[in-house]
Structure formats: structure tokens, C-alpha cells
Image 1 (tube, one colour):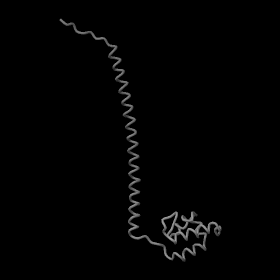
Image 2 (cartoon, helix red, strand yellow):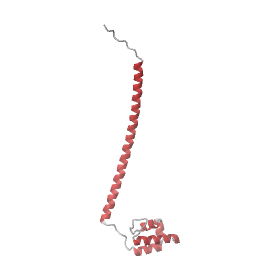
Image 3 (cartoon, one colour):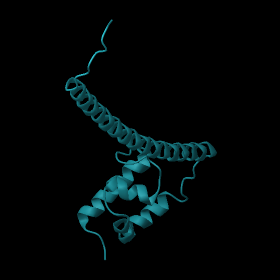
Image 4 (tube, one colour):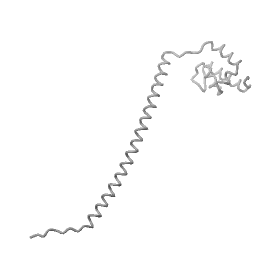
Length: 134
């Protein structure tokens, strides 16, 4: 099933931007995935546009590989993202414990106040005889 004329126009414009090094919606890597993203169509739509894919393959003979520096950068970013997720999970866990402790502390505070008030009332009601002084 071929693509519509409007979709074909989007894909051609996206291909021109990518090949010119002026992407608007991607990082500029010359991949079919980026072609789809740049044209704002699905990856499946790109694969239905056989004529455009043939042009793409003719202009981008081999996919652009990442340099070792780029690979290292991407691995570092992935590691940092993982560590950030773990740190956020730990922070959320500790915040939950802190909230629970704050609730327990507040309950103990009010219980303590009630007990002190009750004890104070009981003391006021007592009359004690003083020893006689001779």
C-alpha cells in the first residue's frame, strides 16, 4: 500500500533536511528511524514509501556509525540515567519512611500532652495533710 502524496512530500522534505544537516526534530543521524521522526510519520509509513526508501538508500549508501567517543558518551549517559533512577527510588523510599516517622512523632507528642493534662488534673484534685510541726 503506497503512501499518500502529502506523506510523500513530508518524507521528501525530511530527507532533504537530514541530508543538508539541518534537522528540525532529530539529532541529524542519517537513519530511517530519524527520517520517520523528522517527517513526523510512523516507522511503518516510511517502509511503505518504497520509492522514497530507494532514494534514501541511494543517497545514504551506508549507515553512519557512531564514533568510539560517541559510544562512550552514550554509555555514560545510560549509566548516569540508571544511577539517577536508583537514587530517586531510594529518595522516595526514605521520604516515605520520614513521613511515617513524622506521623508517629506527632501522635506521641499529642498523647504526651494529653497524659500531662490528665496527670495535672489528678494532682489538683488531691488534698494531702501536712505533718504537724512541733
